[in-house]
Structure formats: structure tokens, C-alpha cells
Image 1 (cartoon, rainbow, N blue to C red):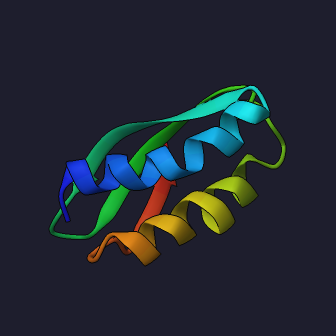
Image 2 (image 1 turned 60 degrees about the vertical axis):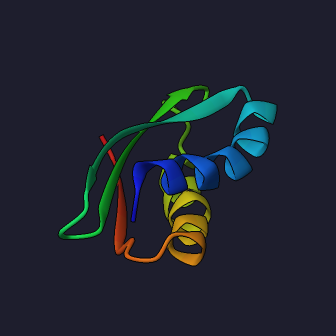
Length: 75
């Protein structure tokens, strides 16, 4: 699980987030625990659907594309 692989996976999600006026930033990676911390910005930062976007969108894609990811958290 490398930051570069995580960034590539986030790049796949970005167009959908940007279409709604938002974006996602990679904040930190805990390689031992498989936890990825991200920050939802723009319209995504204050959106009531941000938890669903985080878990059903971002976390799902990262778990599918980057081995070792166990959880994605918004910070």
C-alpha cells in the first residue's frame, strides 16, 4: 500500500467529486493499520451526503484498487 497507488485510485474518483463542486485530498496513510485519512473539500466538505460519498465511494474504490486498505476516514 503506497501513497502513489492511493493517489492513482483517488484520481479515478475525482471527476465525479469535481462535477459536484468538490474534491478529495490525501492527508495521511497508516500503512500498518491500512487506514487512509482524506479531507473532503469544496462542496463535498459540507455536504450532508459526504459520509456516504466517503464510505460507499472513496473507501470502496480504494479497497478494490489498493491492497492493504482497511478503512478510509475523513479528517
